[in-house]
Image 1: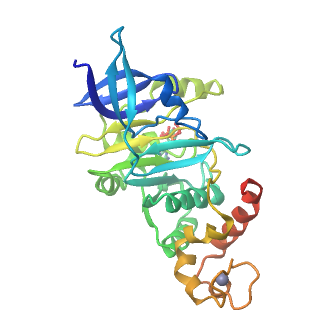
Image 2 (image 1 turned 180 degrees about the horizontal axis):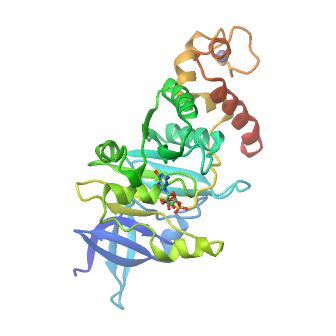
Image 3 (image 1 turned 60 degrees about the vertical axis):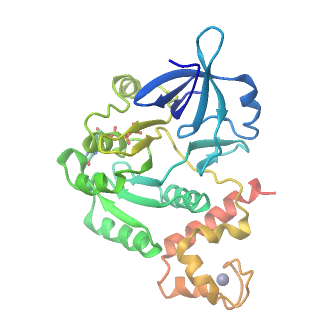
Amino acid sequence: MEKRFTGTVVRATGSWYEVRRDGETVRCRMRGRLRLQGRRSTNPVVVGDEVACEADDGGDYVIADIAPRRNYVIRRASNLSKESHIIAANVDRALLVVTLRAPETATEFVDRFLVTCEAYKVPAAILLSKIDLQDPEAVAAFRAVYEGAGYRVLEAAAPQGVGVEEVRELLAGCTTLVAGNSGVGKSTLVRAIDPSLDIRTGEISESHRKGRHTTTFSAMYPLAGGGAVIDTPGIKGFGLLDIDGAELWHYFPEMMRTAPGCRFYNCTHTHEPGCAVVEAVRRGEIAPARYESYLKILDEDEKYRK
Ligand SMILES: Nc1nc2c(ncn2[C@@H]2O[C@H](COP(=O)(O)OP(=O)(O)OP(=O)(O)O)[C@@H](O)[C@H]2O)c(=O)[nH]1
Ligand SMILES: [Zn+2]
């Protein structure tokens, strides 16, 4: 192979990286000085990054340069941390996989994830997984809330092949970040879409069984029909970053649509008279659950803001 090439990071573990170019994957390390550019982030090179690699004197490849990112999805490294963790860069879409039961995905997790996508301008869609196990009334209620907010909601039962074609169409030709709590069926779904994708095999399910904690890393998988899936195992929560409390409502699309009717231009939609958002919640035009999430995130994240 030549001394220098460019490619896409498809796996990033912190100590080594897999870079894909022309259908071939090359294992690389990172050049020391690039680490400094990470600043507040715990991970300076992430899945989806376009990088330039060079052979060092020993013939090993190192990542020498990172192209500017089109976008990225980020969260706090942990709920109590001020450090950030970039989940992936250069994504076209996020697909949030949700189950209402078995296991139950917390509403707050869904809303924090959607806020993150809005804040970083990543179009988001929601997939209700394990639809065979869900209560139809709960599904209808969920749809009403999130379609009302403006999100596309798909349904699938991947082992039965239900809804798989629709998801395949959504993912075709795009780089999609697939996120969701552990056990909601992400890897089952991705395998149903493209059986050649061997996502998180033996090793991890083995450690699940023993109840051990394993650190897992995001990885990008090219789809047979074009496009790619970024699998992000082990995300338990979403701490928001760099979002000013006064701007949080900008990332709730239904509040964005309603707020022009507020009496005060700097309305926070909490206590102000003449608030069109509060009025819309009262009339049921904005789902109370979403408004409650807004208040909760506003309150909980206060301590992280400057
Ligand atoms: N009944 C039902 N079970 C499903 C469905 N999809 C996945 N499962 C099962 O749910 C369990 C978890 O599925 P996974 O695909 O491993 O879930 P995951 O989201 O990748 O989980 P992590 O690897 O922990 O992030 C497995 O036992 C699957 O067989 C579904 O649509 N219906
Ligand atoms: Zn208002």
